[in-house]
Image 1 (cartoon, rainbow, N blue to C red):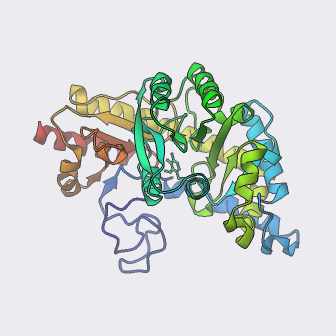
Image 2 (tube, rainbow, N blue to C red):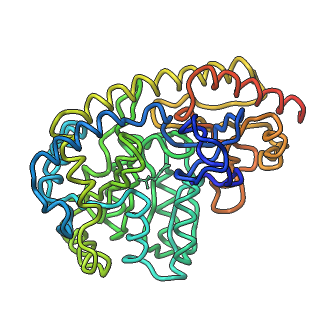
Length: 399
Ligand SMILES: Cc1ncc(COP(=O)(O)O)c(C=O)c1O
């Protein structure tokens, strides 16, 4: 996911006792001393190895070899039931296991949606800005990407309506809650408007809701998953942000017609349901109540880091940068003075041992050059403090 560091040395960040030149086992490769706030992943110390051991012991004690067979196309029924119970608690509305389709993570879900619902050259709508790696998936599928404006309440639904008079998009991709990169949450009123407009135009809405459960000091409005009976909505969720990304496990919540289309893909007919073994393991995580405890802890830790980084940025950057304090998710979206091109600062930042994602990567039209995305998920407060100081030094040199 993060490719800004030359991949070579190994995984010091994840396993301090490995020497450099070891075989690379994880995506990340961070030079010693570097604090890379571009990394939107969980801190290695928050990866729940003991919890997974307990769940594996529980699952394997069932002596049921069926978890090693090709899986049911929609995903294992017992896992989906456990997931539905978990989501029902958080969505404040009953989630039906039959409406859940198991994926190998949100990215795989997005790729499958592109395969099934688009052809090269089709137009899609996204928010401007949008999650840069989703844009990569869309480009892989040869899609024509049109960015729609956002304001402090999220996607501007009037702009969507206007664009629907000129284009016939294969779908709208939106990140309604704790948006990546802005952390903005679509208001309750806009969610209703969006669902209604989608229904009127028969618009396929792909709602990437991977941060919905990571609310720290504010309860977000209902997920778009709660609207699946009111139109063509695919609500994407993932265990990457709430448990562990290496599990490669997620879900799509949708109505029966769209569920049927997902299930009837060649991928599933040939390979069966996605990640059946991992699903059974996570079924135990859910049934033993371990997910709930883990999520509670993550929310405390991330909430603390979010408040800490916000304060540190205010202290170090003063009026030279501005941002809205997030209420959940992983990110702070920093606006720098107009004349600054954040991408051009990357090499100087590297020399100062600090990293970030420049705003232009999140733009479907090469814009947003004076923005940067900072993540508070990967580092604890001492590193966040140091990184904020280093960013301030760089900014001072360039103003
Ligand atoms: C908005 C968004 N969608 C999807 C993903 C990737 O999720 P997964 O690991 O489930 O593929 C991320 C991770 O950064 C994300 O921010």
